[in-house]
Image (cartoon, rainbow, N blue to C red; front, top):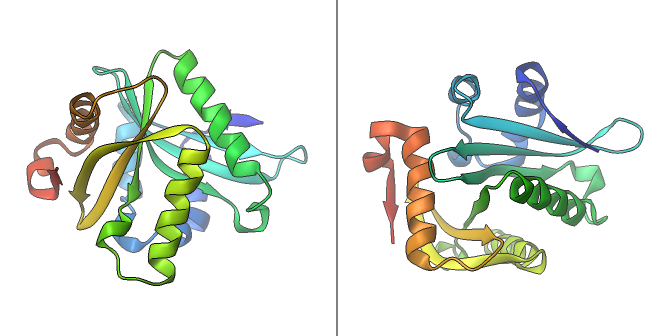
Length: 186
């Protein structure tokens, strides 16, 4: 079951899970997330099993002007991984976003900038997961907070210019004037 979460619920997930599930360099401040949530530019889904236990979570940046939603964080709790829940949850997310008339984009670490080893293998596996779940890998990449990302999108074809414009718009809405010093697109 997917449930939209309020500040208390997603703050608990952020503090207990997200800060451990993602590298420090990728974790935005909870204060910034809450500020954007209050401006109706951020929302969070929890994914729960039949016993009401958290199985996964997804944090989103909402760009109302371009009808684009960026999947900011997506994770399945460790004990539930490799069971198909990630694919099931992502499928439900894609349906909800499409039903709302928005386009879904997401960023993944770019393995082309990683050294060979487990971290690079995990990046390649992550891209494979999204592609297996009908996400489209664009030619757009960006360097954001000193991390190099590739941009993927759901749904009908978008050329790289449209992907670039939508991604840039979401980042600009979220970061404001800080964007120019934090993000370089290619």
